[in-house]
Image 1 (cartoon, rainbow over the protein chains, first blue to last red):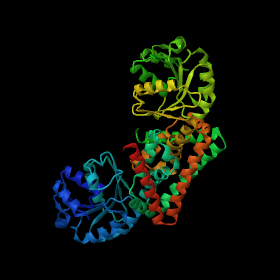
Image 2 (spheres, rainbow over the protein chains, first blue to last red):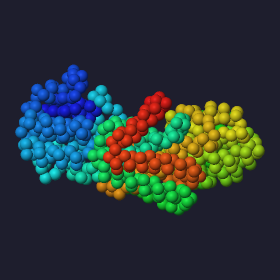
Image 3 (cartoon, each protein chain N blue to C red):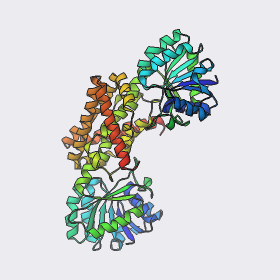
Image 4 (spheres, rainbow over the protein chains, first blue to last red):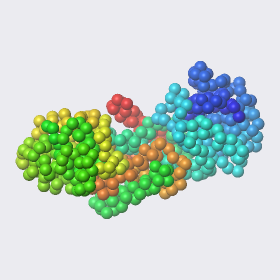
Length: 280
Length: 280
């Protein structure tokens, strides 16, 4: 395979395009903004417009807002060559895979649900960069309609775009875990920064405050759709952390030092174990 | 002033010693561990043992566990030369300043409550480094017993140790704000990592997860004392974030997209304003 198509040239799709071009692939792209396509052609990131090259591509990547992904892929599918690999880049997977996996398989296309675990607090093609995925994990979700040869091919392609690992999982497991590792972080950051104490914090900044609030700088429309598409999983995680915060509240309220030390030690041990499992 | 004394040569006191030595001060230190003092003498960080040089120092810094600070300072005070500046490094200030400010003033010493806003997830002299405070804020808490000339001198000294700013405030304001910028971050990190989903997260790592859980790797005995010493302020912040998490829970539970977008947009705007105020 030597050519990829990309629909949506924002932060993620634009970075995929730049990484693929840098890796030696021909890249054909499209975007709702004609200006963005012009820029990408001028930058030499795109070798042409996707609408002129459907027949040339071996893989199509789609990086759009969550609620647009299914419709655009179904609309595009009849134009794609037989056997074309189709990978989306959406942060939730049950909603996408259940709508597409069987249908695209019947049409002779090879769909894999994808989620590149990388991002920035800024968006758009102008912030896209060829090294956004360096060191990141590319998650691929498979089911009974997935073509295993397509997964093998994808496992060869994504490391060339910078990813340090390709994680194969199911849409169910993806959505359950991502609710904890990514979605909850965004909810907590946004909740954290709502304290009225924010307005008097200048000069009292600490690294921990910066870390806790970094991802509060998010795109509210995209994240609202991601949360609603993963409602049960994110609600479960919000309730988990709320219960654990209540345990801290109780221990401090009751001045129960033993309970407080135990809660903190449990968190420390979990973090140590987690670091060790990651080889940190 | 050309010599400082330091009691407690752990991560913070050890880093103060290394930074002061690098800045050209003579440093005389003491520590509960004889081995640590030996190491610091051998490293050339210390010019001598504090017990042999009380009369030579112009400033004493004390970096001990919160509950030890007041007793050790009161025990040491009679040995210090008249007019000696005394600065502690404890993460809570009302408890320390109320116990020491007037008493040391009566003894002819010049006490200032201090809090260096820097740290690491590891502790001890072996992790101390001369550049720990580079770019950080040094908070000084003053009251009616504070000698203003001592504050002026301290404002000249701490930037030489790497601090980018010295923030002058009161113990009340310090404890109120620090509950939000630092203490809450440690509680939330510790609560975050308690989700059972942690055990299946490998391969799903994201930068936001790492940021949210970094400071869960804490010293539970020290932080338990800091939380209990600042009980009302940290309880208020835990309850603030819990209420805000409940707003997210409600909006997602009710599938109320408008409310959810509004909550997220409010967080984003607050983060943008906060970054702007910091010049980011």
